[in-house]
Amino acid sequence: MTAVPQARLDALAAHFKTLERALADGGAFDREEFARLAKEHADLAPVVKVARQFEGVRDEVAELMVMANDVSADQEMRALAREEMEVLRDRLPKLEHKLGTLLLPPDEADAKNVIVEIRAGTGGDEAALFAADLCRMYQRYAEYQGWKFALLNLSETGMGGFKEAVCEITGKGAFARLKFESGVHRVQRVPITESSGRIHTSAATVAVLPEAEDIDIEIDEKDLRIDVFRASGPGGQSVNTTDSAVRITHLPTGVIVQQQDEKSQHKNRAKAMKVLRARLYDRMRRESDAERAAERRTQVGTGDRSERIRTYNFPQGRVSDHRINLTLHKLDQVLAGEALNEIVDALVADDQASRLAELETEHV
Image (cartoon, rainbow, N blue to C red; front, side, top):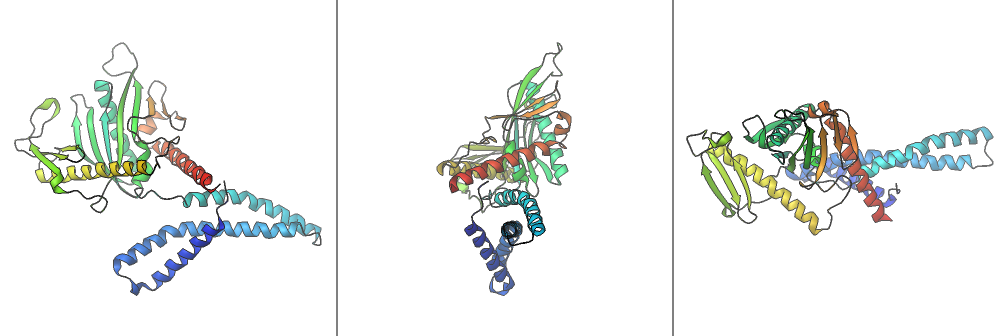
């Protein structure tokens, strides 16, 4: 890895000290500004800690090198200096890599909660059953992470499958951990309706959207067309005697959101607006990335929902992520949510390595 520029470390330390002085003089700020400075200080503290460790080890290596090359020094002292220098030299690349990772420009959406949309793709009833499996996988994964999981909208099939499931996952780092799940998930297995034992290939799409607040994106009520109707269940049968279901169309973009899970029209509208806001925020982020020509084409992929990212092979009991060539023979544990972290960790590490490589190229 290319060395972290000293000028950047100096600027980082100076800014951290400025924040410390400002927080010590807390009376000079209103509550909102003080909270902003406190958050920036807290976010910067781990970076400064590692930067100080890196600089300390680097300076100590330089001092030991002088001692080791001092021909006037005692032979035994020179040998000890060389020995200690080699030990510290092994620590430097690890600290430098950790520091470089911490210095990567953050994704402003990483700290947000997420809206996860799962839809059955090619494969009929089997695809819908697989979509239900994925929904349960994310629900269990959320439980393992200590996050909250809530279904916002669900369209079921008569066999227990899901045509579409929209859920909200709330918790620290939810988007940072789940954002690489967007794409086409493929399953290979023998459907329960298959009498000849033939393996079928089906698919479901997953879209992971950062949940947007009012401050993230403004929606003009004049840009919305809101239709109300009676909710329907599998097969189209009416399940409600009142017009409680809500369909919201965002006229400038054509984005349509439908919500019918709640018996209250007001609650359905609130949920639909939450999903609409997330979709528009996601759309805005993608357009912004494209305008800045910053849409990275790394091994982790672009997050395009048309991109096949993973295969779940039941006969072989394996899960393969095609973006990073990772295969785990832990299908049951992955679908149970407990081993999904192994895939997520690998995807996050690969993304960080790609971004670090880009920074190195920029600094060359």
